[in-house]
Length: 182
Image 1 (cartoon, rainbow, N blue to C red):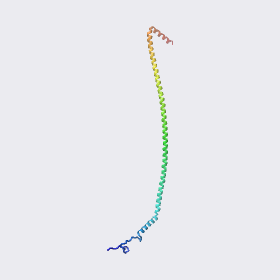
Image 2 (image 1 turned 45 degrees about the horizontal axis):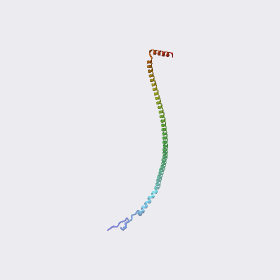
Image 3 (image 1 turned 60 degrees about the vertical axis):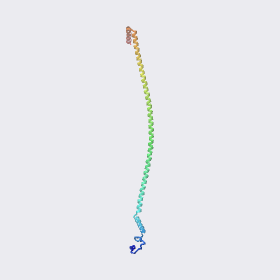
Image 4 (image 1 turned 180 degrees about the horizontal axis):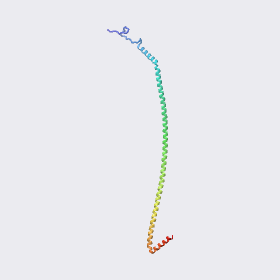
């Protein structure tokens, strides 16, 4: 005993055919289509596409502003790069000029040191020559003094050997007369 499915209308439907559900007399695909149309109408009525358009326009404007800012930053970066490249070239030129100036000053210092050393050598040579000449003069004077002393001693010995007391007295008197006449 099998019972047949019962419908809301009270009529029996044979069991081999299943009844399709419906709402307000519409089949499910039609009901879905109607619901979609209602959602679309509601979205249009609430001006959602315009709001989406405004939001997209705002986003586009923001992106444009960011691109403009990025472009200006890129230009500033290029200007800074060019400025620093110019400074680097300037520093390189200054470095070369400084090196040349330092080399020139070093050459001048070396030349001055050379002339100063030559003058110092010449001055010291002259001083050494003068010292040698002074030593020679002193040696000659000392030799003369020694020779004069030796001659005086020899003369005194000769005089002492060849003169007696009477001759000495005569010489002394004669020397006194010469000194007095002067």
